[in-house]
Length: 131
Image (cartoon, rainbow, N blue to C red; front, top):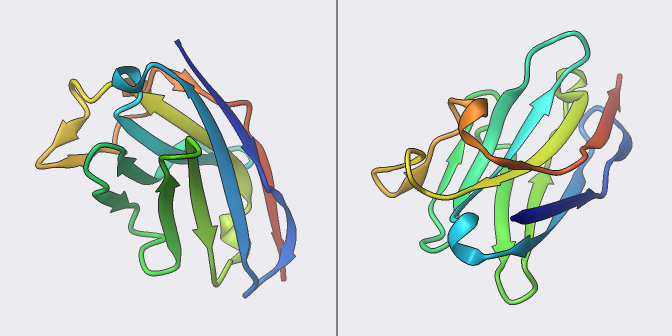
């Protein structure tokens, strides 16, 4: 099993920055892909960014490309989401998720297209961006 605990959510004005943290534990082979997803109020959950923990390659959703950065500190078993240039439409519950690479890793990167492929989830961290 894999456990994930998010922290760092909060409220910020548009244009501001936040950093989300995800503390990860469990067998490394069960968490080869770690990703951030978000679920805006009244909408479906969507992929934000992913990192292949064994190769460091990253993938981003189109709406956050160039503004968000996912990174990891493997020695501390932490994954981060650095969010810059926040917009009102970034308001959502943000979830850290992990899964083995089978069926998710393609071309050296972890897909964020299919929410259901990620097996393990944190409890979420709320991010509110005001205008």
